[in-house]
Image (cartoon, rainbow, N blue to C red; front, side, top):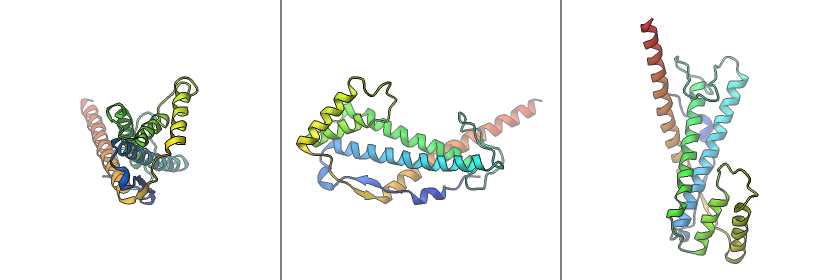
Length: 200
């Protein structure tokens, strides 16, 4: 049975859209999409954490191990906060973060058309959600320093406004992709279980 979309998702916030005047610079479009993807991954992370907390405080729900989101129980899960929905939330967060990382990795391929566009690219580099051995080592503080200098001379990124519809659409897209993946893994696990049973 397909897991229904978490009611927590209905209460998610908004994503950021740039002012129309700022859409002429490819770097600004890139940073906008990157910020949205990161924001959505954060929302989905919160959903996952809430579901995980429900599983931990409810001994009647068999949760998933931290390293195996595919270990869903064969029986249908109908309760909100069950292991199937938790697995879907985990995978949806991964889809959103992967999208953010892909946008981040495309920085070298995007040419800024203005100083604000350069600031946008530096914002992505400085704010990159990657594992850094030591953020105080070269070149991280130096890049941050260049970014501060540019902002002092040129100004910061344009102030955006919110677009709730896009946030809901992107969250639903990641949720649906995650649901399909988890359901496929679940069916594969059940098939393997039956195969082992027939083998005995």
